[in-house]
Image (cartoon, rainbow, N blue to C red; front, side):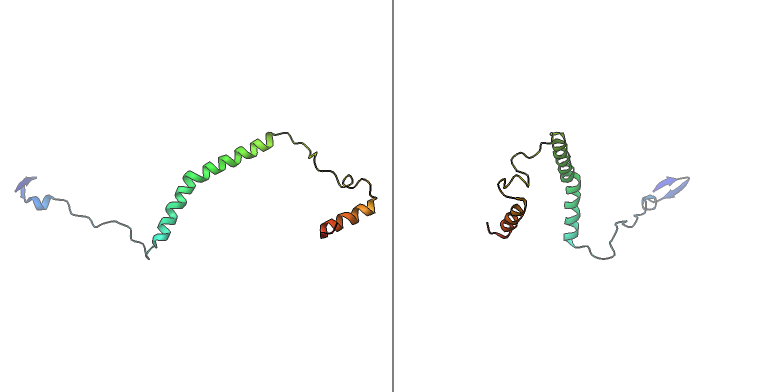
Length: 101
């Protein structure tokens, strides 16, 4: 017995009452695949996507910093067939597209 505020009280009466568990129970069962998908997406969003975004930004910045040079190896439309007239050049290009030369 313990004396509390002038009264003798047993130790069981002074112990705090056990509160019911406050664990959240879902309204329906959640499949394990959903739990795993959430974990995988969290990892991807936290670790993988920022690194991929940095790589893409660096690649765009590198491409933007390079001077743009015209393609010198590809001849223009009128220079491809220099010894043909304009009408003949058109016919020749059409035949090339169809697979006949």
